[in-house]
Image (cartoon, rainbow, N blue to C red):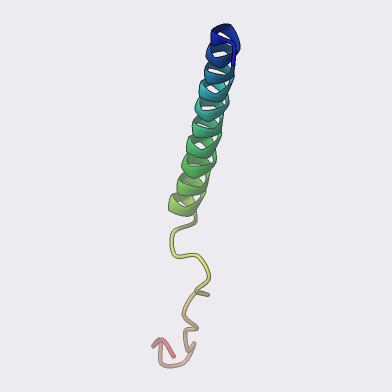
Length: 56
């Protein structure tokens, strides 16, 4: 193949990989930030008995 075409393909591939890396890092940071804000996700607060003031 042509040397110029090979370099062009390498540059486009590198740019695509860098864009993919940036996108994955952004999504990862967004998910990490939303998880840390949520605290304990998926667990409801413990029910408290009004009369004895103890958790069930």
